[in-house]
Image (cartoon, rainbow, N blue to C red; front, top):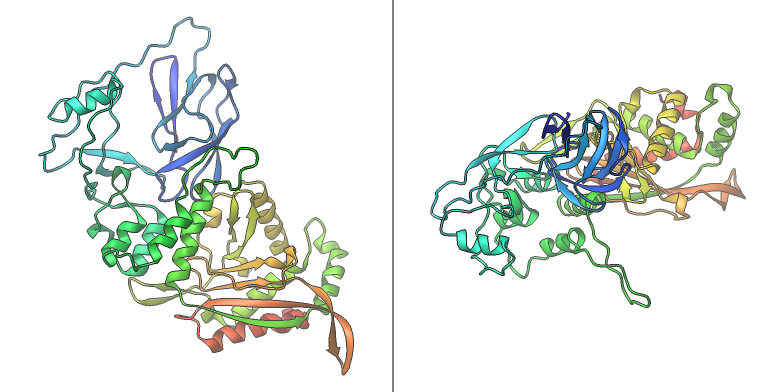
Length: 472
């Protein structure tokens, strides 16, 4: 969706667009242009990071960059102008100074805040809500609060007014996806929650407060705060004993999602150690197969295919828990998530309709997914709608682990390192390629028998890969 305004016939402004689902802000990671640079329609001018992913923003018109409104590292609200472009360079017209905009602060006794249209980073369009913007310098502010506000605008320290909770916005309540998920899991109607976040946004603490009055004995909110709200700090001086790193964007969303998953879904993890010598031989043979030319073949490919076959044999594992409706939602498709470590944190893009893909198609999709994630180009859509996930901790030399479910998913398979170990094979101890698998699942919808069958099927296929044919 193009987000821009015209300041004159010559200068046009480009606003922070709605690049993700349910978000209201994004951080400018990097500018690819500077004032004076020529830009063309569709040219990428900057990279921004939301709570979903890093996204490149193209400019929707031609011209010469006149001004960058925000430096790198700044978090900008959706709808704020981020760049001004001279679309008629050489005309000799000087840019007009923007006129002060009269913005009224509502009287304290007013029952309602004025309604406005607040842009959101979701789909297309904007949402009706109660909004309030910061007054600008040179603005006359009427009402009893005028003296304090005007003193602040003129650089004097005003007397701080008593804090007032943000009103509950009309229409759809404002909240980020992790907060909506938490409210859904706790059975809280967001329309009944009083927001305390800036601009009337509902926070996690607001949801917890609506569920149960906060007390010092309740540890959950404190854990979430420590994971998701680290204050920025300057770079560490030489010899410093500790460094504080701001948690925001993708890393912040991951922290919130993992805390929500761990405290809402009852996790059960099962383990199995399996001889994968025949799978490793199959991988070596497939690398030489002309039908697999141009795609990357590795053990993860066979493991992914084995999990898809196991899900086909045990379809009840591919489901989700609907807390609001108190229903189990059976999925008749598999969007296979692959956990990928990136400089911005762990993300889990997924292969859409992986169950329908042939082995070469799955290999191609897997290679593209991993390379895109490592380059930081994964889109929010690529991370939405996952049903089951694989996390390969073996690449770090780790034997296995107890993975946490992605919110909304029923199971996650951890794959450990494949090592040469002594193993009893045909009655004799021989060196064999061995690995350990761990399957975590949501015990509300996957019982021990079902989880065990899925894990046992994956292990059986990796031990005898011919089952990919006989069981498919």
